[in-house]
Image (cartoon, rainbow over all chains, first blue to last red; front, side, top):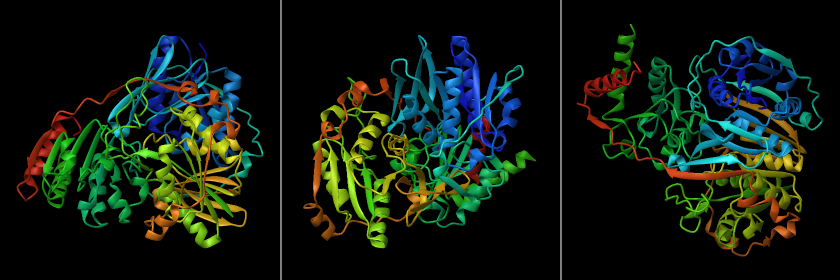
Amino acid sequence: MSELLVLIDHAGGAPRKVSTQMLTRARVLAAATVSPVSAVGVGAGAARTADRLGQFGAQKLYVWDSEEATRYVTLPVVEALQQVFERSGARRLLFPSTNFHKDVAARLAVRLGAGIITDASDLQLSDGDMIVSKDVFGGATITRSHVRGDRPALIGVKPNAFAAEEVAGGPVEVVDLDVALSDEARRSRVVEVVAQAAGDRPDVGEASIVVAGGRGLGDASGFELIGELADVLGAGVGASRAAADAGWIPHRHQIGQTGKTVAPQLYIGAGISGAIQHRAGMQTSQLIVAINKDPEAPIFQIADLGVVGDLYKVVPRLIEEIRRRQG
Amino acid sequence: MKVIVPVKRVPDTAGDKPLDPHDGTLDRDRVEMVLCPMNEYSIEEAVRLKEQHGAEVRVLLVGPQSAQSVVRKALSYGLDSAVQISDDAIAGSDAIATAKVIAAALRQEEFDLILMGAQATDARTSIVPAAVAELLGLPALTYARRLQIDGDRVTVDRESDEGWDVVESTLPAVVSVVEAINEPRYPSFKGIMAAKSKPLDVKQLSELGLDASEVGLAHSWAEVLDFEPRPPKEPGRQVHDDGTGEVGAQALVDWLVEHKIL
């Protein structure tokens, strides 16, 4: 069997969680078909991911470790991947189902004549065919799909769909790519990267625990309390649309039908009523906790634990108690 | 300046979502369909380009005859004209096949800017804007939280996980927008009345030079094999706090310990 490719998301050489999660699953799938797992890394620092990726089962790393790749929009990664498909004869690629990588996959699919399925929550092999499970309609329905015929398949994997597990792997074979960017790729430039300090707090889209606040916070300062709870739990911070629209927190934290879809191990919602538009972005979370004054709030219908009470009374005590236990 | 706003008709998020038991596609006859909420933002941004740059804005919708009410709804925000691509052969197209139809329709139009929503609220794949751009050989500046046009230059603040990237290219280009970009206004009564008489062209695939063998359910490269409703959740535990926070916090701590979070 040809190689199974995994496109790595990394921050300056540090693989993001979704990368090691995808590799873990790729290892299991590849073992069944006796095919090697090859990672693909693009951008400044990408070569430094090699050892870490090896610990999660990558046997090979195709890498274009270059500042140039980060200076233009989307196409540097597309053109690097085109070269990998040509050189390796691979037919399948797993990519992180995030905004940036969906753009990459969309363009690559057109160039390769590949089929594309995004937002996979599970991957299985059936007679050599890759079967992709995904949640649709806000998690109300699960579909199973595949790419028809013998076209290349590009499969987007949701963060937290799989748990990352290390293996005792051998050394990773590093293959340097030689990418000469097209004129087309140079037409869209990255002028500036603006990063707002989040400290050690994980991004809401890939955090294992998410603490989210809504209208019930009353004002922007409520997110200080939400952030404090998030930090004692090592969680990311989410928000309902009402809270984002009120300007209490940037929209990129928004969870719901027009925001992010998250599926963490644990979701804690405080002051969020749980309108269907919000539930569409979080109801596939493994465990759901809700804190709300209103016993009739719809979020209690899907909560594993619901606390009816004033979040400004409950949450500070909760933080205090967690801190006490953590010593 | 000419702007085209592709819009989508989607099932109302608040309504039921029955799937056709035969082919796993949405049974669009049995659900309430609306203009995609994300298009309110792309339309608002187009209206602003009308106000600031005197842009001429045209709506594009791919969908059956019954979707015409959604085209009129889009026009009611004050846009100038519309084209609807309506052909039975398109039904069941996946995202790439849909992008092919949109791209083929755009090849027959004059434009400087294509303004789309970053993700439709139903399928939520987010891949159509970039796929359309690729098919047309255009730049795609996606997930825009700010859009600025200066001559033939387009600059976008592209939302990222950490903040945003400032990205730029030349026109013509495809831009997709996120909610943070603006606050949509409601259509005016005047706009709603005027929408009824705005020019609307309806075209079939053959008029786009696109063969039916490239689109539709049977020719999409990604195929839904089967589907099932998510099993209903067991009702959870509910605890009433005593007003001091103590009972609520204790219940939370016990529960977090029980589930090995703490």
